[in-house]
Length: 84
Image (cartoon, rainbow, N blue to C red; front, top):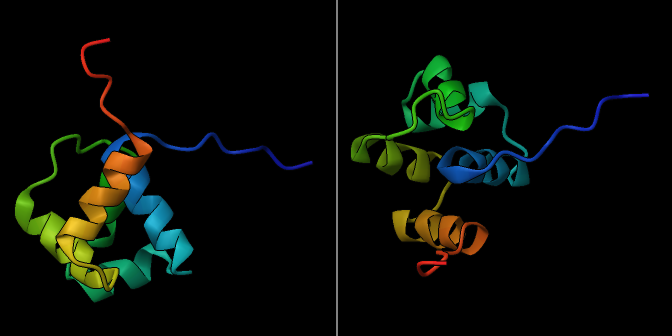
């Protein structure tokens, strides 16, 4: 029986879920966005915790989304705790 993968959190998890929802491989998103495949992978696994704005813009474009849509999805998945 296969191992169930724990969903990734944070911005990288959002990028991964958006990529998978569009049935794109890492290679395909890298090609469409102009980011390298290792960079996309490291963003998704949060090895790069602070993603540069230019890469966010590239990833959003590669996903066929506006950056605001990517941020809205991130906020939906990671609501602020409002000081709790």
